[in-house]
Length: 230
Length: 230
Image 1 (cartoon, rainbow over the protein chains, first blue to last red):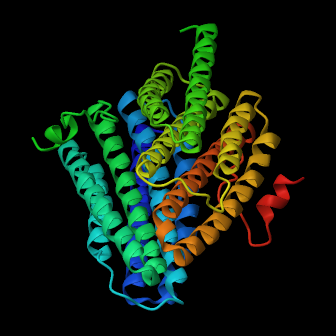
Image 2 (cartoon, rainbow over the protein chains, first blue to last red; image 1 turned 30 degrees about the vertical axis):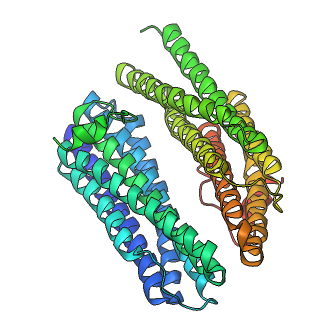
């Protein structure tokens, strides 16, 4: 393989990862739309997305492996390919989270629609934005942008904690609403996981761009956030 | 690096991954022991394990990357190194699940101890066994053993579904027990995730040993299980 063909293969890999990210983000948005309008036909679309995402995950992994096996990539290309493999795995799990949310929506179908003290669409929109932004930081090789995602994760965590508190209060005080509150709580947890996956991806982008390993550097004095807020 | 030194580095990598797996399995067992005897000092141990696991994850990733960068591993070694990178990521998330369980136990501290219709220690012991067995299948390069783990995952899923049903019934009928039931439900979910990570690892072992990608091959006719039961 010539250098030019190798570079083109790297571009193809990146392109496919972006398609994968688009599918994952869309799956989350669809799952939340299904929740918002209680439409099970949208749940079917989420299931179909998950199948497509799983297939694409395998293709990307195989392409990455082929590139590693056939070439002797230089350090920077090697880091890129490894980042692709890791980001790919996280995107597949974003698809799984979308599926979990959609399963909850199906579960809620037989229940009365009630008002709950939680703004799930807002939380979902933040989580989906994180996925979108991490991939943008990946395209632009922008470590600073990737770092800003670590701060967004703290916001989603805070929303999830607030939702947990409000929803368990509903369960305790209005037990007839417990099934709906529990489903909402599980959906919040899935969204919090989506944000975690976006955070993993952001860390992989920083690793690729800077060669620095920023994972698990959250210190009690708020080191990570302080760094992100620079 | 001579071939012999390279082989020794691969052995070191494997050795460190086994230490990582041991820490992850222990973290789950400790978290469940904390749940069983309601002892917060064990939760502190789980937190310390998580820090150790995160540190070791970085070391293993760096060692794997160095081997890829400095050598031009042959196909079989390349597959091995990639399997290590993926298994490493899953083990780190097993540590995260242990931490989640331990957080739930802390949350339950202020609540009255009650009997719930769920056998969490049994579910935990199955999940921990899955982690242990996947790593054994990795040491012995035994794809058949790895396949048997896919069946165990179905058992844990079934236990999780049964727990969900029983615990939501408690929430609906005995609302004063709802907080405890919810915590138990979240712990079951964390254990189900541990089983999922063990399943991911088993798939990576099969990928490494056989070069076949078994991921997402679960068919409606039970194809995956039929295969595992051969």
